[in-house]
Every structure is written in C-alpha cells, then in structure tokens.
Length: 362
Ligand SMILES: Cc1ncc(C[n+]2csc(CCOP(=O)(O)OP(=O)(O)O)c2C)c(N)n1
Ligand SMILES: [Mg+2]
Image (tube, rainbow, N blue to C red):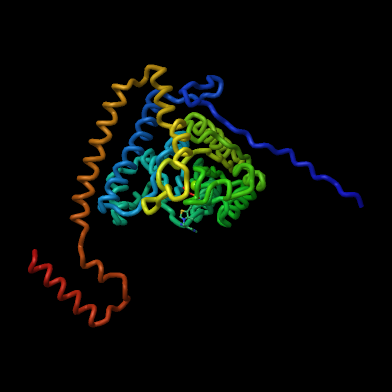
C-alpha cells in the first residue's frame, strides 16, 4: 500500500486596518457610528486611567492584587462594541476595559479589588459572567452558554476572553472541540499579549500562530492586530454574523502587548527587556485611535485634555463611593462566619465577647 497525502489547505489571515500613524485602509474599515466611536475611545481611556489609579491605590495598600489591562484596550472594547448587550460576556481576569464597556461601574471594580465580593455582584438580568482566575476555566462555560442559547433558538451568542498562556490548557482544547462539533455560536478571543507571567510567547508554544490551534478543530480562525480597534471590531462583527447564522464558532487571535505588570504582585524588570516595552509603546492602541480621530477632526488635544480631567473626576467620585461602601460593609464579626457548620463553644464565647466589645466602643 502506497503512502498517501491527506491534503489540508490552511493558512491564517492577518487583519490590520489602522496603522500606527492613525491611517486607515478605507476599503476595510467597518461602519461605526461617530458617537459610538467616541464612546469606544472614552471607554478605552477610562480603562487606562482606572488602571493607573488602581496601581497607585494598590501600592498604598488600599486595594489588593489586580491584573492591569493596559495596552489591551482595543482588543477588549473593539470586541465588545461589535456585540449586543444580550450576548454573553465571559471574561478571564484582565478584562477591565471590556467590563467598563458593559456598563460595570468603576466603583464596583474598586470595591471588588479592595477585597469585597459585593463589588462583583452581577444584576439578575445581566449576561456577564464573573471574573475567572483559574486560567482557561471560563472557556468551556462560554461554549455551554452559547450551546444553550442555540438550543433555546435565541439570537444570543457568547464571547470569551483568554490569554496566550491559556491556549496550552486542556480546558481550551476541550472547549474548542465541543464548540466545533456542536456548532455552538461562540467567539474565542485570545489576547496574545506576548507573556504568560514570565513565560514569553516563543516558549509557550511551537505553533507559528495561536490562531491555527482553532484550525485543528475545523474552526474558522484568524489573527488580527489587537492594538487596532477597527480590525478587532471588524473580525468580531464577522464572527458574530457567522455565529448568528448558525455556522458555529470562530477563533480570533489578537496580537497585542501587556504594557504593564502581570499583576501587582509581579516585577517584569526581572525577566523582560525595557526596549521591548518601548517598541510596543509606539503601537499604543489609544494613541493610534486618537491620531485617527484627530485627523478626522472628531477630537483635538484640547478635547482629550478635558476628557482626561473628566475621567479623573469620575474615578475620584468612584473611589469616594467605594470608601463609603467599605465603611458600611465592614462588620468584623463576619470573621466568625462560614468556618464551622456548628461553631464550638470556645468560638461562640469569643464572638460574644467581641460583639460586646464593639458595642462598648460604639
Ligand atoms: C489553572 C491555573 N494555573 C496557573 C495559574 C497562575 N496564573 C495566573 S495568570 C497565569 C498566566 C496566564 O497567561 P495568559 O493566559 O497569557 O494570560 P495573561 O495573564 O497574559 O492575560 C498563570 C500561570 C492560574 N491562575 N490558574
Ligand atoms: Mg498572556
């Protein structure tokens, strides 16, 4: 028996529309209403300012560890802006900009990061899932939600965000396989930010692209410039059309960069070159969009300055609200709860004594 070849004709498309000087390919630019585009810009800028403020608050010991979205705002807001509010949003742990687009209040993000679960409470009618810390664990959930939406014959689809590192996890592969065979209406959005903590993309996988992992499961997959809000929007819009038409999932690999620390518990100077960061700063997704908007006379340096002041004020107010809520929520007696189903007598006595003490103090 001769050896035969099974021919597989595959390649990965790379989509880029807005260059680093703010010039666009007019043939490829998606139609986005002027006001929506300004809203996209505002949300990206708010996310950047909130990241910077949270970093200061964390350094002052006022909030806990968090993962900045800095540098990835176009991948997140560009994607969410192309979807409907009724679609399911399944984040990992770095999606501040996407969460802000969905209307999550900065005060809630601050409260959550200060260690209060109340900040992560999601309204009943929302289609947003909570933050998922275990890497890739959220990806199968998105497939389940999308499959259920299809089963109910609703028009909803799901999008899930994950990193380059997550594509090495079993959950990622199981999710893609299920989505493909079930033709689930789901968009897999990989933010390839070049690092998984201290593990560079080059050592994460020998695959030339991460998008081709989707092709292995017969899922239409492409790469986009993840710092180009128009390319991300266009790719997600196309994927959403495919999903709503009943043609199943899409995988999008956004090529982007983690401009800040992995989390506030990390020091990247120990493992990455400052020159690399500088190179990516020239590709900053916010500056690129601003260059475009300025050329179109929809924005000016003066307007940007005024907007930045307004966003800082919005964050000041959010932090004041958070501070008030922390004071209301801080009941030290909760430390006795949820440890024992039946607290031993010694613990009950301590609780009573402490309660008494608080009353005397109050
Ligand atoms: C299952 C699991 N293993 C390890 C960790 C620790 N951890 C947190 S983030 C991370 C790297 C994730 O990298 P990537 O998927 O590229 O996402 P990024 O942090 O770059 O957004 C690791 C190993 C975890 N949270 N969950
Ligand atoms: Mg990463």
